[in-house]
Amino acid sequence: MICGLVWRLVPMGLPGFFLNYGGGVLWGAMVVLIVGAILGKSERWWVTPLAAAAIALAAELFRLYHAPALDTFRTTLAGALLLGRIFNPWNIVAYWLGIALALPLHFWIRKGQ
Image 1 (cartoon, rainbow, N blue to C red):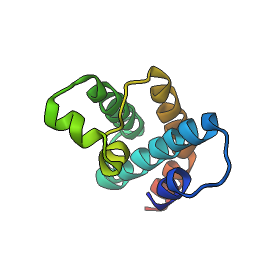
Image 2: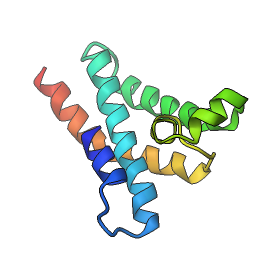
Image 3: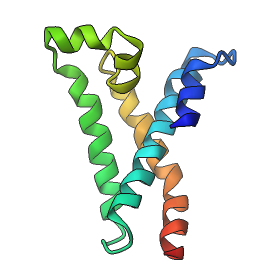
C-alpha cells in the first residue's frame, strides 16, 4: 500500500500513462498478496489468482455505479484513492498484469509456509 501511495502522491515526473497504469499494476499485486495471505496454503493453487482477478474486476465495475453521496466522496482524495473516479477497462488489464507479476512472489511465500 505504501508503494502505491508513493506512486500516486509523490511527484516523480512520471508520464501520465505510467503514473496511472503503474498504480493499477501495484494495486493488482497488492490484491493478490492480500488474498493469498487471507486464504493461506490450504486452497488449490488457482483459487488465489482467480479470487484476486475477480476482486479487481469487481472493483473496476463498481465505478459504473453512481449515487449522489458516492459520487461526492469520489471527488475527494480519499474517495479517488479508495474507489477511483471513472471506469476505465484498461485499468482491469493493469490490475491483472499486477496480479500476474506478483504470482511468483505469492507462490514463493506459499511454498515456504
